[in-house]
Image (cartoon, rainbow, N blue to C red; front, side):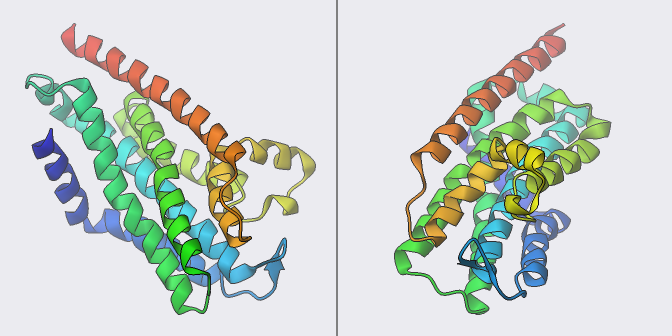
Length: 242
């Protein structure tokens, strides 16, 4: 498992196009939207957008690591080869989660560092809690990526990833605060995992620790996405065995 984990991480870090998308894209979005003046619900726009884009980048990095990678491996027959080894399904999933976490963390830190360079000032504990909360919260989307990677056909992995990624980001208030949406979309947004994920960071900006309600809802999503990933992995395993 350690060998596979190391190979997964090295392969992802060597993929320049992947790194540009997961690291440079959120930073570029922050530079565009974070340059506005004013505040959002009493929070400085630059700081609010910084957290939004750090969350956005973490979701994209971890989700893509599952959806597109696993779909490509299924198409190439790599997952079939792995099942001929002594590697267990649990070990395979753990290696995928580890590789997603390695890419997700830089996506968060880079946006936060860009915000600091552009004048965002927070207390030391706020920077630390932001990194930890967003990093651990991103594991929810890493598990979702694994489930979708086994759910969708390899040829449709890219459009499905973009639809889920951007759809959850918009409905979760990462691009535009939910207060700017019609009432129906606000109600939908409040139950999205991306909104609860962003709330972890937005609460810290307000000088508070992440709310237990947001953590609990993300935990429920984690359980649901884990069940999806386990179900689809077993289905794929049965097809290979047949």
